[in-house]
Structure formats: structure tokens, C-alpha cells
Image (cartoon, rainbow, N blue to C red; front, side, top):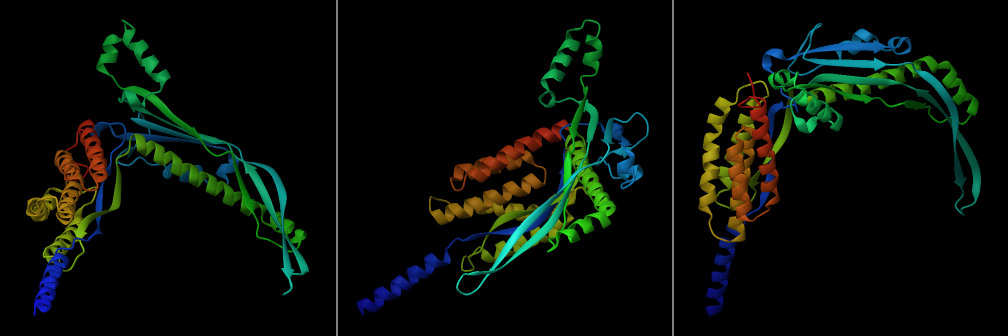
Length: 372
């Protein structure tokens, strides 16, 4: 009788412990916003111009007009005269440098490991040299982004008694970001069992190979130009996958409501795009935010399971407030997460990101990274 009673008691206690088991899992959702550039350009002056200088050898494979059209600055209007940001791209001559033969020998062996046959494969490598560079000319207001030489020039201007009024009236510095493109590209044929076949392929397809290499060269170069120009000045829309920590323990009493919460976030976040206001979205998400706020106080104490529940609440509030462009609230949740003591690195990371977001929004005179 005593044994049966003890067994029953242990089963009841065990089931209660199991009911409170806390397993968290990542549940992903979509989020869109603008990536803010390093430099601020007033909205009424967001114009850019493009100049393309192209050698005949490049233009024969990739027309200047196509290069011109594929250079863009997100959030800016293309103009022909007096742009706020100027982009110059220059592609020099393409030169054939050399060809070389590559060989590979393959051995076939019998079951005793004795070599019964050797097969030599041949491929040809052709190499071309390229020359090219780009420049992005625009205003810089951030002292940290200026080179030592640029800072010295700015200081010299400030000390010039005849330029002091002009310098104070227009603190922006017009500087150039520049770069060069890779010097060499190569093409390797497939392997042939006959060297003559490999050489014949090169002879018969030389023009196609050259055109393909030029196209790759220009395409890769334009990616670099656009990335650099937009990193400094462009307002680039982006779509990302984010996640919340949601309870994955079906026996836990919070499981059903947490499933509803993540389903709501997944559905509502589809409206979060870079070019649409998030005011209504923030109102629609408020019940979810309220739920996670209550969860922080619902599971107090030092119990590890309760600590994990609080961690998920702080984390989810931190992420949602960050995506809703509420850096102060995100920082507050990050600090709470750190004090909670479970996986504090997440709080430190988002606190830093939120401080940066706060600074960038102020710099760009924006209340949100989501605009209409």
C-alpha cells in the first residue's frame, strides 16, 4: 500500500515537472525595411549622375548604354546635370596575356593494384588582363568617414580667415570614394584526351570566350560600384528573415497561446515592407506585445525554466520593437534580458544595434526606416 502510494505520488510530481518543461525554438517571419546609408542627403536633393568611359574592346561586348542604365542609387533620381552624387566608371582595354596547358593523369588498376592503363587529360587556360576603376563623388558630413588627408584639408579650410564663414555655412565635405577592378580573368576549357582538341576549341571559340569574360568582368564591376555608392548614399529596401523564441513544449500551459502569437506575427509581418508605413502594423501587433509584457512577470524567481520563459519574452519584445523602429524600447528590453541572466549576449548585441539605429534615424531625420 505504501509502495503504491509512493509510486502514485512520484508519477504526479513527475507529470507536473514535465508539464512545466520549457523548450524554446526559433520561429521565423518576414521583415522589410530600408538600409540607411552612411551619409545623409536631404530628400529634396537626392539626385545622382553617371558617367561611363568605355574602351572599344569592352564596348564591343557590353555597350556603354547598358552599363549606364545598370548603375543606380536607391532613393535617388537620375539627372544629367549638377547631381548631388556623381558616379564615374571607366573600363580600359582588354588584352590577351597568354594561354597555357594543364594536364592530369589518371591511372587504372586491376584488382591486385597493378597499373594497367594511364590516361592523360588536357585542358587549356587562356588569360586576359583588364583595367578599370570607379569614383563616387558626394558630400560627407561624418568626420569618421573622412581620410586623414581629407581631415587635414578640412582643418586647413577652417583655419583660413577668408573661408571661415563659408566653411561654417556648409560643413559638408565633397570627397571621392574610389576603387579599381580585378586585373586578370581566365577561362579553362573542359578536359580532352587529345591536346589538339583542346587547342582547337580555343581557336574556334576565342571570340565567344573573350566576350563572356568581358561580360563577367563588367557585371561584377557594376555590382561593386552599386554596392559602394549605395553603402554611402542610397536608401536601399531589403527583405529579411527574422525569428522569435517561441515555446515548443506542447505540455506547457503557455504553448497554445504562443502558437497563436507566432501565427499572428507571421501573418501581420507580411505587411512590413520598406516603402509602407508601419503605423497600422504597430497597432495590430500591440496585443502580441502586451502578451509578452505580461509573460515577463508571470514566471518569476530563479528557476531555470522560468528564467528561459522570461528570456523569450524579453527577446521577442526586443526584436519586435527594433523592427518597429522603437530603439529606446528595444534597448530597455535588451537591458532587461541582460539582467535576467540567461544568454545575455543577445541583449548586448541588440542594445548596440538599437543605439546605432537611434543615431542613424536622427542623422537621416527620419522617424522610421519604413516610408510611404
